[in-house]
Image 1 (cartoon, rainbow over the protein chains, first blue to last red):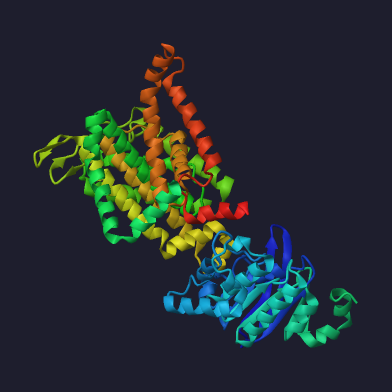
Image 2 (image 1 turned 45 degrees about the horizontal axis):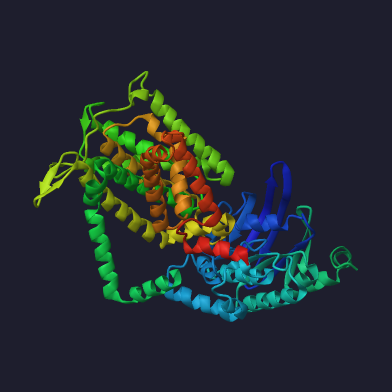
Amino acid sequence: MSMLEVSKLKVSYGGINAVKGIDLRVDAGEMVALIGANGAGKTTTLKAVSGLLQHGGHVRYNGEDVSRRPAYQLVELGIAMVPEGRGVFGRLTVDENLRMGAYVINDRGLIRGEVDRIYHLFPRLKERRDQTAGTLSGGEQQMLAIGRALMSQPRLLLLDEPSMGLAPLMVEKIFEVVRQISENGVTILLVEQNARLALAMSGRSYVMESGTVTLEGESASLLDNPQVRQAYLGE
Amino acid sequence: MIKAFQSRLRQLKKDRRAVWVGYALIGVALAVLPFAVDGGFGRTWVRIVDFALIYAMLALGLNIVVGFAGLLDLGYIAFYAVGAYTWALLASPQFGLHLPFWAILPIGAGVAAFFGVLLGAPTLRLRGDYLAIVTLGFGEIIRIFLNNLDHPINITNGPIGINKIDPISIAGVDLTRTHEFLGLEFAGTHLYYYVLLGLVMLSMFICVRLEDSRVGRAWIAIREDEVAAQSMGINTRNVKLLAFAMGATFGGVAGGLFASFQGFVSPESFILLESIMVLCMVVLGGMGHVAGVVVGALLLAVLPEILRSTASPIQEQLFGKVLVDPESLRMLLFGLALILVMLIRPTGLWPSPIRKREFASEAT
């Protein structure tokens, strides 16, 4: 049984079908990438899975049907989402942002430990713990968004374009941490436009094109696929 | 000079005895205030202080919705109206009902909370300007209902309003009469002052506790970013409804007290200008800051009255006659004061730390 099983997922905005019935699965401990061009429906898929969007189709999490569950309930079940564009609380400090991420946890001692763990993972955030999130650089905000999502102690982490708008050096740093998180046993579903990076990081990948999955398989083999190389790796 | 005073104050705060002496002094000052005002300025001014306390409670309630949860509500006075009319209908000759205040107070709070949810439910997906317009409409709907519910069945007495509302009576002590305790004479306005003061302090306490609670943090999250708040595991729907209901409860209680204190209610007291006035109190005092909001309410409730009573005599002394009608001058100066405060202290007179931060970070 897979940790996450999505079947016949359909999402439409008004009359426009953004996602046209896709299937995908993520096994426990895996890192799976969802790549594709702008407007392919990647973010929509992720939002539907995380409960932020209404959809037709089925989402099963650890065997349980969670298709109609709102986002806040999924957090309690162990699914955390790092939203596109980071969505940090700009007027709150780094520390307050992290603590907000632990909203579903009631144990104060546990929260303190988690905050320390995040600061260990992102030493940069520790330096800026009393700064408001709005004053951080884009990369630091991305770190904060990831750290905040980890505060709820998720088993499945949904990452939406963590590389968006960041300098290459920062992207490298972020993905280094993402790899670490994965190695610590958190299952990850990663949405990325940076196909090369996503394929290099993940075990398996899905390629989306205008609302459907056109290719899927081992990331390593997709890296060699001439179709992928031409369309997404610019060769 | 101010810096020196602030550091001295900080030093004093460290000294626990000094803190207790400070609290005791404030307590004594609040206790003798009605007598001092009565002796110095006359009974009318005690009434004005009483009204200022009612406004403080209103502002505290609106602050939950606007300041804590960030939901702009322009029809807040509707809950005040609901509370006032609930009280009026349950304790006046209108239906011949004369329930005791301890029964009406929770009923009024409950009815107002129900109306809060009634307004909140259809507006859950609205924010900012759109929410403001719907709430504004809601406020007007309630007022128009009150104005027209005199037929086919007469419920509210329409524009005439409801008269002869029972005053609060605690343990047989009727709060509108003058009583003697310990050789001191307590007029009705004085007694109401103590009741209102107690309730305002209780409201402040509740608000401070709320702000510091799980719900309070959820409100902050929603105010900052609703989608992110959902991703944190916050049930945004319930938390928003709770904000509306809590805010409305405060408004309802304030309305009930207003009805009993005044002895009379009519739809005229619940016009849009009142909603805006309460919003001004919140914004001017410092949105989201409990103490600031109370200061804003007291200032905006008392200052216009001072202007009203001094505008004519000053003009007569200066020009020999009254050039500008005090009523219009009052609004003019009032508007000017608001503009000045927004220019000089855009976060309010006494802002919350979070708001202060926002402007500090924008400046750098």
